[in-house]
Image 1 (tube, one colour):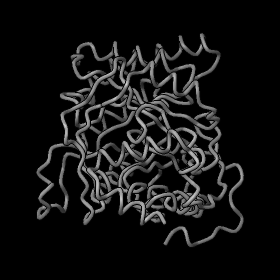
Image 2: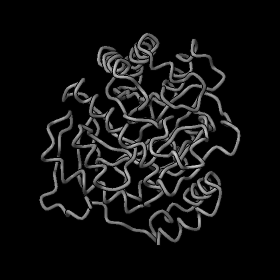
Image 3: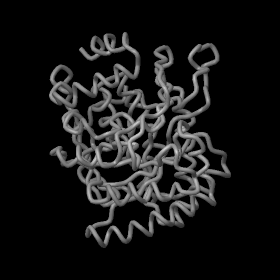
Image 4: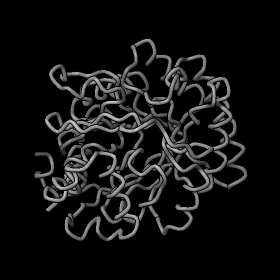
Length: 361
């Protein structure tokens, strides 16, 4: 059934299909599961002081404005990350700005943090009855210079703190000019210190600590990765998300759309994302929370990220190509490796006793 729906949607422009799907999910969240219902096995885990029903989440970018939370919950995601959201609404980059590469199971996008602003997102969250783990991914407006980026991140952090289960700082999108410069160690330390200091103030205000994570790019050198890891550890960041999309075009020499500017996601991203993830685990040790994202197209890809040290995983492009079956497949696959993976800051609450091995195929 999902393959039929996907084939129909793939006849439309990629962004138009995206908008149509979100519109239907927003108005009729039951559509998310009615034709494609999948049994999602239980694999609860405690991480970052939060209880996740399973290790598989929806990555930021699919639901930028938090409009479809009921649908994502019905599909069985263990957690949902919405955004990236900015202080003020902004339209993003000119269209067309999203391109499918079906032969490579990939997408290229240069959306540019198109969103309706942090106030709109918070209204949608308040109106929902979402009870799961909610990450809110924050960024800066395109016209805010890097010298004042801290102001935008602090604005969003203060706004979302009371509603978020965790907050992700997005400094790695390739589609906002100069944003990735914030990953350089000097700028990064200044930003992270300001955010962690504000986090302590907000924890007093709201009576709880909200974990702060940073999402990084796959296009970093070993030296840059060393700096990011050291800054995250020393500034008191709770975890890292590896990775965002890539500006590289691995294996796409004969693909006409490869010349389009923007971030590449999907299967071609997986090797680079996995490499960064593995390096981070080696650099940061077993007690630092890591979320693996990038190129998960089947359960085995999610299992591999667990083996490399990811505590949790997220999907986006794979979900577009595979549909709801990918969720249950990845939950089962990550549960299958949970017992054999070294402890990595996650406490398994109730591992499955008889996992179904089909999820890793």
